[in-house]
Length: 117
Image 1: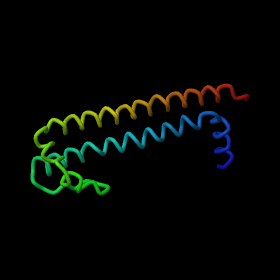
Image 2: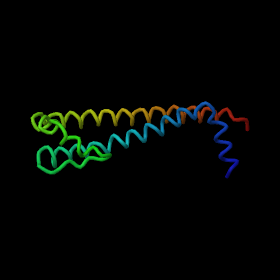
Image 3: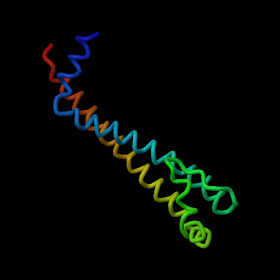
Image 4: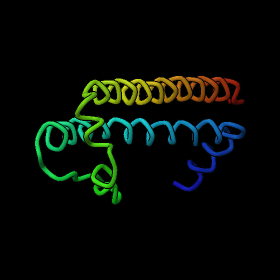
């Protein structure tokens, strides 16, 4: 088992950065994809309804401290714009993930083809 891992790691030289970037793209794409339902929940419950804001990371008090909530109520299109922008960013990371993983896989296969038998 350990020799198989060493074998793969020797052929991954100079590809580890791309692998790491691919993993980061997966993480960021997932994180941005989870934001869309939060924006919808905030808009429906707090902006349209009268429920107190329940935002993660202590951001729940942010809309109540200033004039942010009345501004969003007057400009409800901002919620739709936020959803579109978040989706574009998430899909951008998804595209980069696919591109980087394809490049790394092709290079890895090319190196395995040159392997002496």
